[in-house]
Image 1 (cartoon, rainbow, N blue to C red):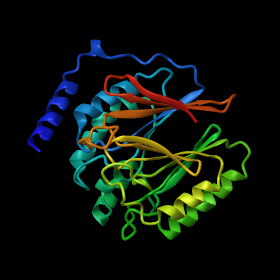
Image 2 (cartoon, helix red, strand yellow; image 1 turned 60 degrees about the vertical axis):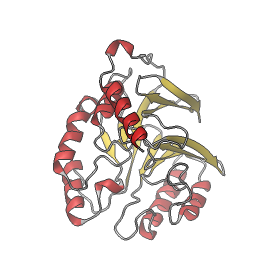
Image 3 (cartoon, helix red, strand yellow; image 1 turned 90 degrees about the vertical axis):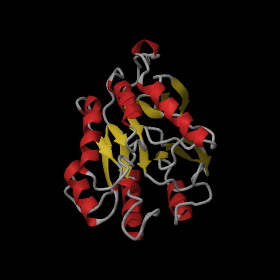
Image 4 (cartoon, one colour; image 1 turned 180 degrees about the vertical axis):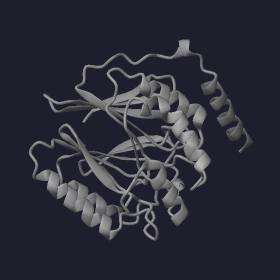
Length: 281
């Protein structure tokens, strides 16, 4: 246990002191547009600050960023919110930042009130959707009070209506879904599936436009395919990594869209600004 703690401390110190000259720069891309995704930073601002630096210098600039939850360690903490926005400034100066609620954001009345104030939300739900170009983005909330680690019936019905609607719109080519909790954890929480994982997964299998379901909560990286649905776990934005479960490294995702060929490329970019993995959907 002591060895593991010392290892994490040493790794964090190396990352914080990482000189700029050692960074492998990502070359400008030829995609039509892109967006970035990260999850689970939980006060790990030394790591998060580096990842933000890389996200903010991508050329051409991504159209928006999505934080997949667990911004803070203690819910309802306005100081942690202030730190998050301070460290996020290099990206928020250049692009919108959408937030998925994680369990560390809390679901008590005070935490929800602060969440709304911090994110400018005006409606009562923390799930929502938006479109950009020929793609559609669905943000789900897996931490509704008394429905934790699940997609409750009201939200499930809303989700189905959203998917039915975009299916009938020819101009929408791609659908991306974001949830904090994985339906099927692959690391430290393996075996403790989302409470209605099979029901939600079956719904996803009915819609060919769904290109990826991106989740977090586990502090690692993973991707797998189940019944032709691609699941990506991204939980490496600064929280202590889950060692012993495979792909445990700090990272964010860059998703590139090529409109004419309907190609989607996803890069996993690490703490040295290196491409750890890339693949096409």
